[in-house]
Image 1 (cartoon, helix red, strand yellow):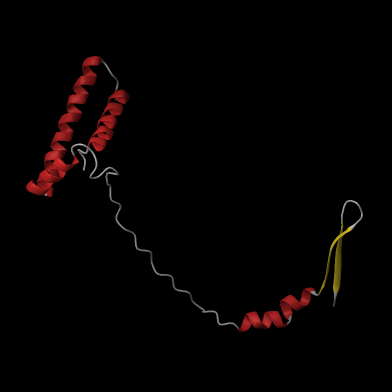
Image 2 (image 1 turned 90 degrees about the horizontal axis):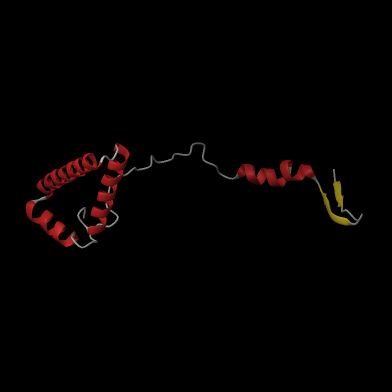
Length: 128
C-alpha cells in the first residue's frame, strides 16, 4: 500500500511530495525493532535530597565592620554572639519606633525604616 501525497503552492507549482507507506513505519520492521529493545518494566526514581534553607547574608564577610563582627563572634562564641546581636537589633527597632512616634510616622513608614536599617546593616557588615 503506497500513498503519494503532494502539495501545490500558491502559484500552482509543486512544493513537495511524499512517496511512502504509512503502514511500514508502525507495523513493519521499524516497530519490531522498537519493541525488541529492552525497556525496564519499573523505573525507580530516587527521592530528591532537599537541603535545609539557609538564610545567609549575601554580603557576608564584606563591609566596613565585618572583620570586627567576625572576630567578636569567634571570641565570645556563636550562641552568645547571636543573643547579643538579637538584643542590639531589638533595641535599634525600639529606637526607630520611638523616633516614628515622635515625628508622627505611620506603621508602614516605620516598617520601611526598619527594613532600611537592616539593609544598611548588611552593607556595612554588621550581619556578617
